Length: 224
Image 1 (spheres, rainbow, N blue to C red):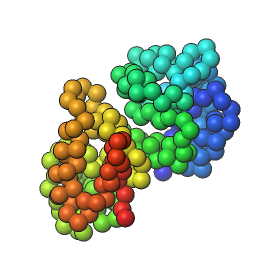
Image 2: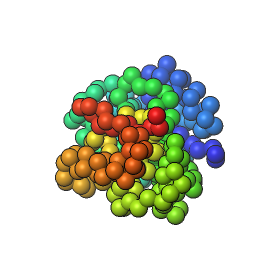
Image 3: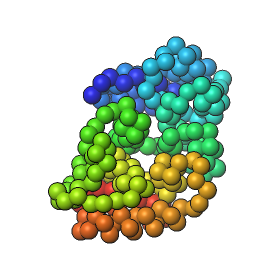
Image 4: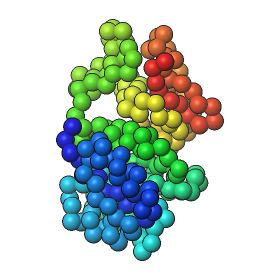
């Protein structure tokens, strides 16, 4: 895998060190910022940043201000890190163009999975096929196979399965699925996800149970 440059913006040194260590183990090049002003300076000095991990509560400039300024000139992927598990904050982040929203405390392994999923989704990590258990998904051919047999999916079913497979083992909220598969301009409700999941499970046959329901939250995709 190519060495991607990550801007890590976090005012707590302990958290910065833990996340940086995990990133460097995966061969990412890490730029560190302890406040919003420092983050913006590094952002403008490094146009090749692949993804930004951005804390909300910081001195000088908070994460919302940083995100707003970055979105004026760039679509670089942003994962928001916050200690405030407030739905309004999560919605605000998505409205500003945040790609993912992770509440503290979080698992560094889960964070790494989200980073890699976003880089794949934005075509920075090129992969011909995703494979989970007996299911394979080829982005290039836009083809899904189950036990080697081709399965015909609608466009949204394909996108939903791709998002699940990219985030294998990660618990995904309905809001996150809606924002990432249906995008921010969708004005329906989360019930459309349940409808598509039901259809997708049926088309995956005996492997439909790879899509696990997390009651009161959303779904997780994994081979059993």
